[in-house]
Image 1 (cartoon, rainbow, N blue to C red):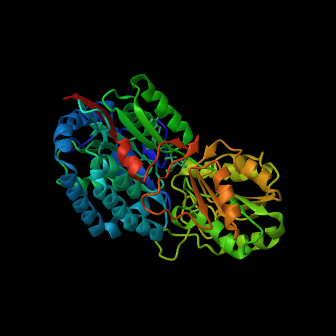
Image 2 (cartoon, rainbow, N blue to C red; image 1 turned 120 degrees about the horizontal axis):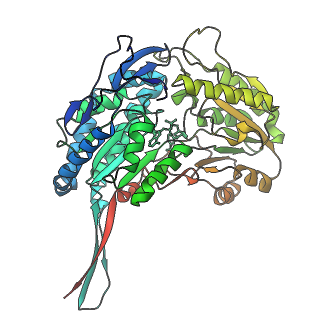
Length: 493
Ligand code: NAD
């Protein structure tokens, strides 16, 4: 099986990295066949920890325990579940500093970004703890002889499969809604960054009844695929790439599973000539999520359409701003850009940079390893100018620190070009003309549009992609409801 940041190796040397077990059915366990994977610190390229590569038999156990626990968890009621989720948050906050450091070592994301992840996770969980009572039904108007109403019930067993870019934040934040709605959850972290999910299980082990939460570590093609196709998991919520999302959807099809997908993006920013170019350039840097996850973000605004009239000063400010970002040891508080999360991904991003050059774009800065760092998967953030819509770097999600700048003159034309990719996750508009902005919002094919903003989303505003960026909505009441099934009842009186 393929090595990633994690080397999959039944009996491979672990380089002395600590061994961990996974948490299934209320117990700490190894994989049924003993297989393990090693997580590598991408800044040092040294082994950091070993975790089980869960076997499909382990999944059977986790599903059986979840099925057993489901009626009791559903019957506990939303207030009891909310109070346990609040205690879970308190435990996260207590260990936030340590968990942020672990995520930095495992993922390469800068420590300041991971502290932000840890600080912003409990409020997300508390949001779902607070709205548990909204998973409710209604009564329908009828004649005097009938009472008609609806009610919502949990699925019982929900799987959460997550990617590597915000390890703890996604692990903890994305189990909150299904748990609050009364489901048992099977969490599968990314094989490249599994360590903080193990710690999450430690925080929760004596909190939730056995079987309510299981954490299955391991590789996507083995345990991820097994979860996606398991007949005992009727509801799968997946966050990751478009190709894997397709595979998850297809694996669920024979069982007509309820699958939701939070997938990739190739998100545009459209900068109008009435804005301050320096301010817009700063916003473009923030919108790439460079300083929080090294540009490895689904919401990274990697296609920057800048009006020709301000192209010169915009590019100058962008290049200066990007060059000022400090690349280095992600555990250092002053670092803004750490390494990419694992070697295969590092090589992939470098190959996109090579493609940009080969296809005729102009590399204005970055795109290579800093001369001061001789190990680790570091890339100085790259800015490409003279990018055209047909180039690979303008069409495909790179998921790394690579910004493509394109020009425009005509509004209709730039809207058409912004919409001309298979993705539709987010879009950004920068203009001082509020009417122009709102007209554009209506025309952009994206599930979330930021106007003169930089990616911060108020709690409760649903996030989820259009087109091939996904199915379903998260971070909102819609997400909570998506973990319930509606039942209509007609009573003849
Ligand atoms: P990925 O698709 O390679 O992996 C995601 C998860 O799926 C991992 O846990 C992996 O082990 C698992 N997996 C792999 N193969 C599987 C299979 N056949 N069946 C079931 N599970 C399988 O994605 P990645 O490289 O970890 O993450 C990067 C991608 O995630 C990017 O495309 C990014 O845009 C996307 N993403 C989207 C959002 C969002 O909210 N829309 C958020 C973060 C990341």
